[in-house]
Length: 289
Image 1: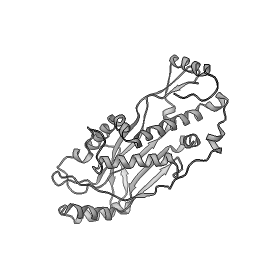
Image 2: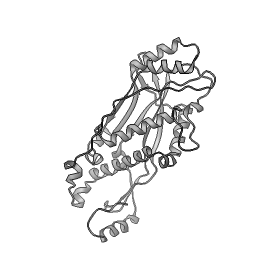
Image 3: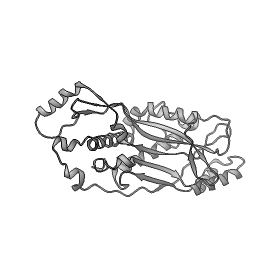
Image 4: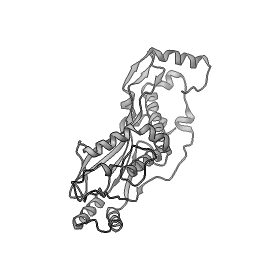
């Protein structure tokens, strides 16, 4: 229901979430790291870093923050960061954490911080000549990355560039996503909400409700959507790398879904004609494959 009700507005805003440190937190962290000469007692130092960085803020757009849709996006982003920063062991083999990929030649806090986010990855949608049958194709989810430049006041600016280690981790996350989703339900749910967002955008863009002669009032406005507590912040957690003197402080990222961009890409196939014919032969009612 959330996807359908957000189908029209998603054309302008997309559906996104992000978990990010505040500018003040990064500024305090920079001040702290300038005073550190060695990591000292790792646990004490990590506690100092977490206190300096403070809570990270959760931002959500395109869907109500109190819905399950929003919670799935935030949970997937949170879990992705924990896997990247070696705060949680992956449930599959072959997915090393980002810290293990960082070269040992850099020390201290860098001006460049990696950012990862999860986004849709589809092949052009397949449709029949009448535009009444549609097929989603492709893996559905990919991990993207770029470096952000940390300015003196703690604000971050996108660079449009990606570091080698962060890119390697993102590519591995994408390649292993199907396997990961089979073991960790939050990633499987993320792919589901992405699919639903694309379908909802397609329904709006192609005016499929009018063409099919259905109204769907319960799904589009009458039905009650279950509400949850809105996620607003999470505590910062840090991890360090025992490789030379290098240690990574934090990572930011999120989930970005722009379903109308996906709905714009399509290919026509006669193979979908018998699929719709079979659905019609079975009589009125819902049919989903």
